[in-house]
Image (tube, rainbow, N blue to C red):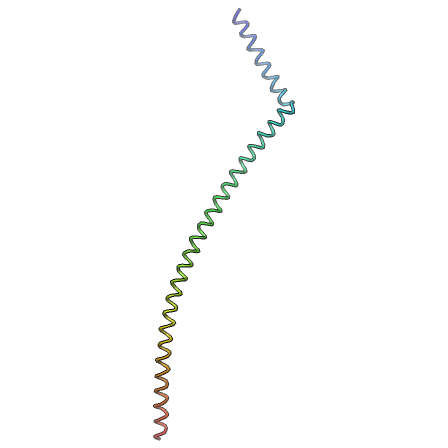
Length: 114
């Protein structure tokens, strides 16, 4: 007899659960909860996509900053080398100018002797 009552209670609960599901589907509160669950899943999915995009952007920023630093260091080094070369060439110009003046004076003297 206990098995019969237990079986009846189980059957009643199972039927009640199905009826509750149908009621939840029709129930406005159930619909709201369902919509909220769907919205939550959608927001989580979009958040994950945005997180990936953000991480990619941060990586790009880091790469750009590193490349920019390297470019600045390279340009600074090149600037120093070019300034040294300018100084060297300026000295050569002065030496060459004095040689030209000396040769011009020699030519003028040679022409005067003729």
